[in-house]
Image (cartoon, rainbow, N blue to C red):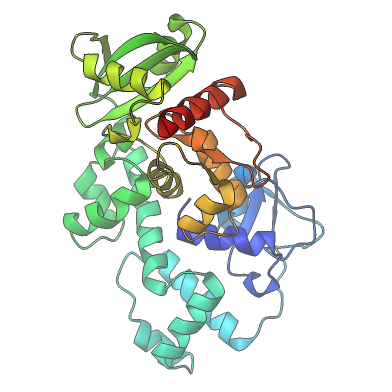
Length: 351
């Protein structure tokens, strides 16, 4: 999730009627799509898809909510109508849209329209345009277009612009997104620790998998399931330093955030994981603290979800994030392991 989706989710959470017509949201568990201001029960963030139009929601298989009736036109003020119209123009065009000309055609100055756009949509016009380009590029890449063709067909003027802006939206290198990780060389090792078996793996770029469990075999299978098209091999000798760092981290003696990482995730997840890696060993923060750190104070649940999906235990030390009341909260590898890691780090910090 990126800044645009952060803003959209805030609108859904607050039932912001001012965003009605700007976008729509669908709930996977019900198959229904609504306006942002709908009075229906708020869904969980992980079950929500966002759409720029009624037709795109219908095309995705959602049916219209009978309460807010999103398929029916609703009266909106003139400035909101202009912002919605600009959204639709940007969505329908891969060419550069002259915002100044568009503003004059709708009776506004460019400055006023840009300000209203940011107030209503939640991000600047240029950020919205980059988001659309990245979405188009994602669709092109998953349909097996080559990277440069996808860049230009999506509306990026150069390959440099694509790699600077779309690559971070994709959450991985564009070629890897297209091929599902095909061709990646991944090496792994395992070690026994006081909190269980650890299987860790890395690409040439950095650590991509660190998970805990009772037995090695299921963890290795999970690694293969997560990277089905990669060439995966065991390399205990080559990864001995990785194993040493992780073993030291379990004892609280070393900080695994020193390890380089190579993760695939949404822009929002990457931001959360990066913030978590900045938490010093021996200290803890709350989910709200992490949300505030990344500038998404109303997205605490989304932050918790991103932390819960962390693929590299210890290297992204999500065990250092607690609930506001000081309780442990969740930990995908078990609360006993989380408490053990916190105790070890606290003891080493005091030594």
